[in-house]
Length: 232
Length: 271
Image (cartoon, each protein chain N blue to C red):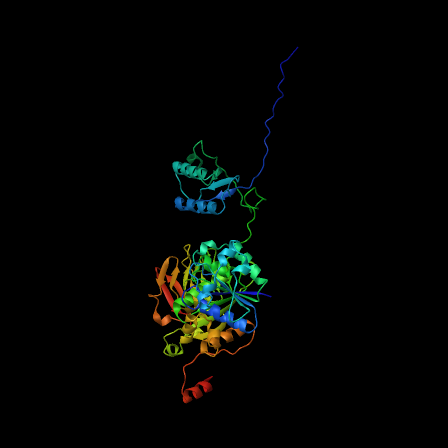
């Protein structure tokens, strides 16, 4: 009896298949570019998990070790690189992702993705307050502008990521552009503010020009100095 | 429909207790059944101003904690039979008040009276927040000076956020009562003027009570000023305010210094 199983011949089948990959195009300085990636990850952690990523290095001139370091840095962020393009092949070591060529740009349609990325309801970028803001109240709105139809009382404060608009009298504190938005401004119908701040630069009531008191005014940043001028 | 009205201010010494007693007596004089409730646990005063300090047996804390029944703690006024007092305890502190206990007492008072006037302690802590907690309306007592006005602003913010009504998305009806208004000092620009106060507080005015010796005299004899001398200027102002609370339209009188004939003539022409 012949027990030797006759191995059926395995054919090596080669098939072509195309995938859509994200293309990262790092720019110098790489450190800042990585910081940008970190910011994206901070907003939506796991965004790149399970997504094919290709590194396009045509915009930078990196040595072999620098490429290895970059790929390593991405790995640390759980971003795995599928391939690299836009670089001479001899700069890629054997343990690096392979060189890719002939990529075509296409529109990425976000497939109904896994677990975490439930479509976030679009957050409003402005906040409207129809009632006066009373002493002791603190309105914090980092997502954008705050508009107050009434007055802001002495001892109240408005903190906004964007600009602040007050159609009544501002007697309390207004802090605009708190997360680094130096283009933010503060407008009010009547200025009697205790403190105005834009992007960390501030003026207290004592520093505000007495001539402005009780007039419509706006405050903005010009370089490192806060300007307060009458509105009309 | 019973109405729960809190008399509050944030700042101390502005006249909350005097106003509670005066408004309570004025409402009772016009035939409403009224109870005034002292929430100033530990520093009670309303019993003195009402002249009932020697008749206190049980108090609000006893009722809140279930030690006494409500009728045992209620004290009827000697002058007006439809005016009652629920005194505070002087030996306890505000922590003895509980939210559900106060809610239960207020609910029981609602079934007995037309008006429940809660005399709030100063401050923004437990006693003050519980005094306003179940209010339908609020009288914010303000003196014409900046510190009092800012504290009132703070209290109005709390009325709009910390009361049961606010949490249900309803409004507490708010009124500003300006007390200790001195026309002579106002004329010299030594006090905030009425328009500025109302502009800052953005709340309708209930009345202006002039600074007067009559208020002090009435307190000293333990009688609400509206009962002690109903013809005095502060009493008339409180009586007008109580009529506005009942929904009547009463013309607002700004206490004024006695002016000369020419001034009055010019003043009228300018108006």
